[in-house]
Image 1 (cartoon, helix red, strand yellow):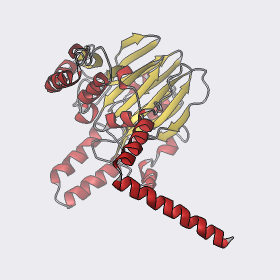
Image 2 (cartoon, rainbow, N blue to C red; image 1 turned 90 degrees about the vertical axis):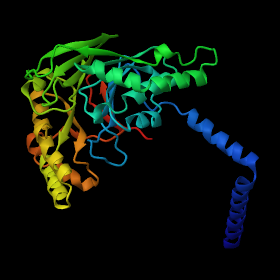
Image 3 (cartoon, rainbow, N blue to C red; image 1 turned 180 degrees about the vertical axis):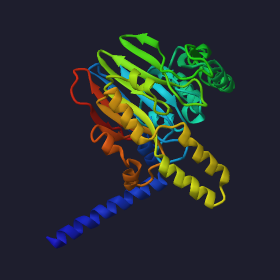
Length: 368
């Protein structure tokens, strides 16, 4: 038996070597292998379920401006009523959407919480990708006052790109129509720059049973800044954007099934600031220290979730970056005393399913 096994191993090894050599020196074999791989990748279906039995939320970017490998900047995808929505679209997040085969031409609207670069950095890229893959109408973008300037800036920055791609690919067949390659701004002016936040709300989108409410929140000196509440068939999800703890947000989030909240562990961030100062990076140290004034910490987010009576709290926009798993312990310090259950630290690709029948919220993971 040992002799037969040895002979079989030798044969398998020889065949493997012949295959490697054939690939290295025979273009026809190379092309067939490449074609098979290309077809397999192109035929992959989206990992995103779109059935009408639940609201679904995907964290497509969970990092703060501080970089973390395999974590894009702020981005959350919401699926409800057969429609897809994006809340914030930070750098690297469109790559995640592509890896998960999310059909970007079908995105109904983008909602921006505010205009920090880590929340808007890939707005132009998301728009371009959806258009280049077949969207036939402009992309609607919602957000606070100032949105018109932001959207106009991205439209201008990508104007030559649109012309190039139209010239490359139109072929006289109407592909990539220029009029469909732009974004349209829908600013909500119920809050004006400099207003003292008081938790005001306004419905900014309503179609197909999906209602999106903008919630005035407190990210001063950034003003205005919004959170968003998505309601569909009795279920609801709130996405905070950047904020400090405030009673208005707790009231507007009342009874939601899931609260997706940004959070920064200020004590760990301050340690980073101290260490940055120690190695001569004084500007970075000052910036890191400042951030505690305008971000909510994990314990405060837990308190917010409790006051709102939400079933599940999911952290995102996580700062400082949790580069090792064991750092979750100090990052969550004090949270269990405030909220012992219903707390999840988000990660890119986390899929949150909120069944419309009110049954338990489910958590899964998309793979790149």
